[in-house]
Image (cartoon, rainbow, N blue to C red; front, side, top):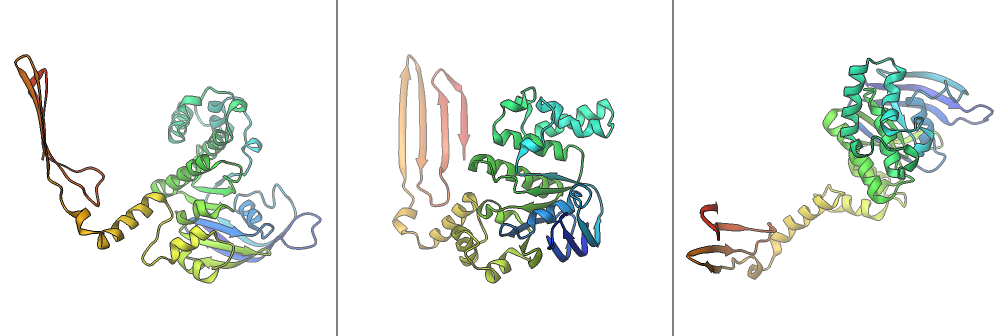
Length: 317
């Protein structure tokens, strides 16, 4: 049994003549990272609101079918301004715990952990109105996870952020999933930023799920204009499963080594002898320098002594 189970669910907003969700069936296991894709108006946000508990209690409307969520979930929206309530960062993080009546000592501990995890300690006393958009979104995310909910639903959380802040938010979400086992349901349009993070991809059209499976099969089945070219290219390359610069560099380095010119791979033996004399003391540096195809720097048999203290030396072998 999944942590989240949706069975034959149909839903329409108040005064709407058509369904926002139609006969939906979906199961999500604990610890999964599920990416929900689709064009505008396809039902992505409605699905997020359903799992997040806002439908039908907050939005109203008509719903049928069965929804089972094994534990409470938290939700992060596009605009952090809609989620920030308190005037100071630390107070905002603590608010969910105050609402639940958590004891003072426990609250202090959990708020401190959340501030550290989100890297917010330096701005914990700042007025939230003075923060940047990325900082506000980090505060909003911190307030959603401080309560201990193990299911996080994110509705286009980086749509209003610059690339640097977008990457930082997604890295935090990835750590929550990868290192702490949180279940993540991410609705996002900036596919190039998050596609590689997902365990599973869901694609929606007109309120229904038209694809539910792996990333690789999604590329084969939905190889369309919807995906950015960089995403399609990275998954079309043989034996390549990367979407970040670090992994891409490692892949290129590995494959370039097979065809690299022998002259570049050849060891360059350059002996460097430096003698610095100061009164009766002398400093010596003897080393071999290599050009390597798989290392930025290579040191071998290095011995170094400081000029003023020849009794102190470092040896690298």
